[in-house]
Image (tube, rainbow, N blue to C red):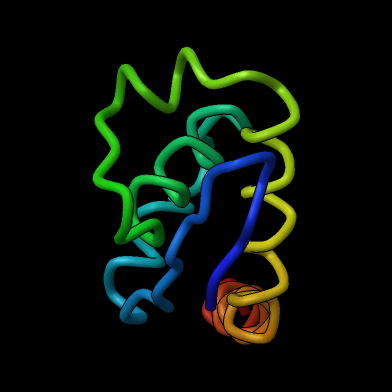
Length: 87
């Protein structure tokens, strides 16, 4: 999936289930989860942790929203898995 924000194009790739679970671990801060999901899914351009943490709000939140579109169904399945394991 390609996302254009301003004059930059970001290439997103859906992560594996294992990597997704690691990125959205329980008790993580929402900002850290979003940062980790951006680092995990954005394949081009290559981004560092510092790049993401200093990203302007429009880019950060737009990428976060597009990533949620990409992995939304997987996140729902993860929530079902977590709830079933609590029983």
